[in-house]
Length: 559
Image (cartoon, rainbow, N blue to C red; front, top):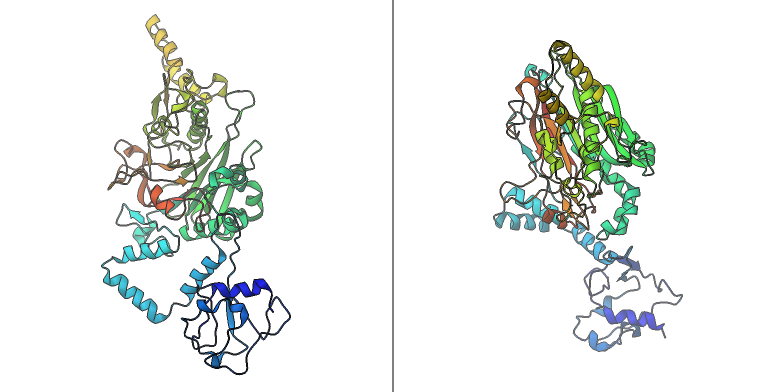
């Protein structure tokens, strides 16, 4: 008599002959246990009758006979070395599908014959779908959402995002141009992930482990193959032990600035040494011990890079990267942090002729498109009089922070003017201008004007910036999304750049013919929230951050 749990196995299975001496379960299941004359969990022989006939009796562990009376039995060929597929419904973590299901699907894909694959292809072609639609359909089955490359220039040298780039060095025309790609990517610090686990309840636990996530992130970086990387939430111990060495092996030079507080992450800017050389690296700390407003530990990093190519002038490019404060109710801190970053750029980017070199600002700004902070970056001015601190970033539809921004927002001892430049340089300009007007006398009305300017509620900066992304799909008006987790799906990541006058992708008013600048050649398209939830949001099996990487290709335009 066999144990009861062994007898119970037969109640869920159907024994049949398939021509290859295999006794299989009714439903396809993954693990295969070969019976070599004994049951693997017991030390007794498998009862194999020596004389089979039409009126044979089924071994007792197969359960009631009525479950099998309709089966087509050919028992005369049944031998000891039959193979059972036994179910294994164990799950690695809560909410994860059984291994049986995953392996079943895997087995089905693995056993697809060439003839069956041809039939599938023929069916897809017969359905009238385009090649792109067929590819998208296949990718969705694999849990991948395909992102397309959008071109703005016919002469862009980026052909396909997953193909190797090739430069024709023999082409004299290409030697006079300098094209390069820039990526902005919040890679999700493991420490922050674990501290905010409520944002990732939709994810399987195994997908949130750093040992699983980092190879995926590195693979994305390899595939996108950007010339400049601006990374946020780069955890310091991971950067030191894995990230830096991995990126250096890909030909990058890395600069890193860690946050000043307890959070062990920071910002990194990495560039390919085959494309650029480093002129200067300038970290920016937003924490100031002597200023109560600036009690947060966010940071920025500003690099000045020298392109490696033959050109008439010694061109330089300023690359800035930051991660502003998240708190939706502290717009006053966000604006001050942004002003500090812009002041550092203004001190690094000037050229000998008084103009600024081309500028690219990347990062997670924790602000949505159309918000006052966003408009300030793009328009170069903001009148914040009467603006509540909770509305600065636009993160909340019904902001809880109702306190009105003070005038001025930050104290004078910060050393940054309302024009977002360091006041020492601003004072030098004012002194030089004052020397020319030494003999002029100010009347009372002029003094009143000067006094009112000191208490102005208007912020300004001198850069003419445009956004790489338009933030809405023109065909539908549906918003683009750069981050997606259990709580929200919005755009908070950006690439801003100083546009050249002939840039066809630039928004009106952002170009400046006197500065030269950058021409946007193309970008990696973003996705909608609906697109991302088809693969269970972010992170998922293939995308291991809760943010999408942003990627753009530029051409340096000289004056």
